[in-house]
Image (cartoon, rainbow over all chains, first blue to last red; front, top):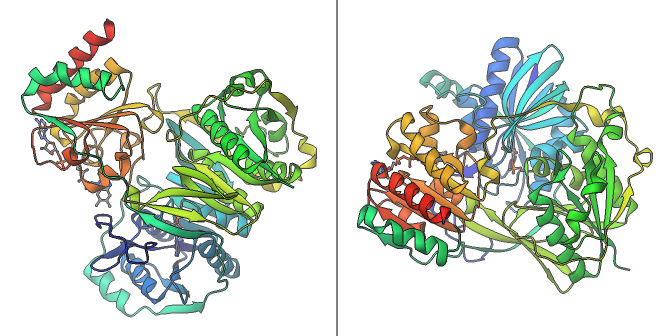
Length: 249
Length: 337
Ligand SMILES: Cc1cc2nc3c(=O)[nH]c(=O)nc-3n(C[C@H](O)[C@H](O)[C@H](O)COP(=O)(O)OP(=O)(O)OC[C@H]3O[C@@H](n4cnc5c(N)ncnc54)[C@H](O)[C@@H]3O)c2cc1C
Ligand SMILES: Nc1ncnc2c1ncn2[C@@H]1O[C@H](COP(=O)(O)O)[C@@H](O)[C@H]1O
């Protein structure tokens, strides 16, 4: 089974967002970067399938030189190969990413392509479905359970208030949601092995984009709330305010 | 010549969802601002009889694509639907009506469709927006990024745009139109093929009859401060008293006390109800990521320094085992009057 996993590097989720001077990006000073948490579920699932069915797992990232870090994380978890589709600039959008990933993936034709359901930086929520259309192969995202039977798959996908069972044939794109599995921690051996794995570099296939960030701002800060300290005796007043001031009850 | 706006609206078992009214309202406003005609598209069975419910929000033209007929293009007759065929119908409909703006809701289905439609129609996409504006004829939008820790303004030079709006953020505005004209979509003109049914939904299961957190207008959430899974009875009672859905922090989901479907936060659901009551939740940044855009936040925590109080509109410093039952009783009392 030939498996590809698309991985992206994102600021750690505890990052305090500061906006840089250009007013359009975050200030990356002091920010630590991690593998997108949903991509860890994607890598884990790819590895489990390989361990069961044989084959190999290639981690693919589009980005600047820095994106090599995320391929290394995938190596540490156990990915066999790594490919960086290299962008000269960090100024790209979901469309640029989807175009580049799909060009590369078309040339490789994997049986299974994994994504995270969303990246936690720009929360684009777009790449898996865009790549699906660009490659003309089916996709299922927000997947919490995956079964493979020969050339067919059955996936459980989370929706509001329930689940959907989606069936498809290979090749297929899967967007991983938390709950799909429990990602492994790299052990010393896999960390050592990762060091010697080469990362293949490919120049970007496509440089255009369709959207422009024109500004970035912090969300309006809430004026400090009313905090009660007398326990149950404050409850009637709280409920009164919820009805008359906030008008939510 | 101004083109048109195509708005895709969702229904559940033949009734339009709340998100549909939000979409109609936003699309209607945008149509007025840009001088475009508004065309609504729905996919389902027998939707014409629900068309009237859209009139209040400015609907004048509704195209209904019959789901049963759509599914008949699939080789497999046991399917519920396929997202790719929906994307095909929406995209083809946009071409037929010369739409250069497509608006839909960022629901589970909408999130899945937006990227597909954007590629099919060669459009830019503004996904999961919390604000949509028209400035000198040009549509721009704002969307939360970094899990709501910041908001970006976006624009595009593309000729076509797909916009998905975050559910529960835009309140549907009344804007009555005289009449809604219904029309059946002609599926035979949409180039549908088996290819649009490669991944199909075979089964849709509702996890429970309970209201889902992602759709609820009121939420009561519990965290590790509840100490034991059994104590979530308190959360459920409080929720029941005000007709709220129940939510949870990741700590209690990971501990197996509550199902993942209830988790609110960065790796759970993003919610923006009008009332969010957080009980025994510290307010870690990843939890806030999922709920900080709630309109009114009430926090109950025994630690006065818990970060949740920094974003709460109202707070009670106290023991959940004492406060929650008293609050439940008070709500019951005032609501029964
Ligand atoms: C990548 C990543 C993603 C994450 N995603 C999420 C997510 O989606 N959602 C999420 O919630 N978390 C998420 N987390 C976890 C998050 O960091 C916190 O660990 C979690 O939210 C803590 O849950 P809690 O508030 O229930 O528990 P705690 O932090 O332990 O807080 C318990 C609170 O209860 C109070 N308390 C205790 N006893 C009482 C009492 N008797 N009466 C009143 N108050 C009491 C305490 O003062 C405390 O404030 C994520 C973490 C990471 C690293
Ligand atoms: N630059 C990138 N390189 C490789 N994969 C990416 C990149 N950006 C996003 N992805 C993948 O697409 C998924 C969804 O991202 P997004 O649509 O941006 O929320 C992520 O979880 C990754 O699997």
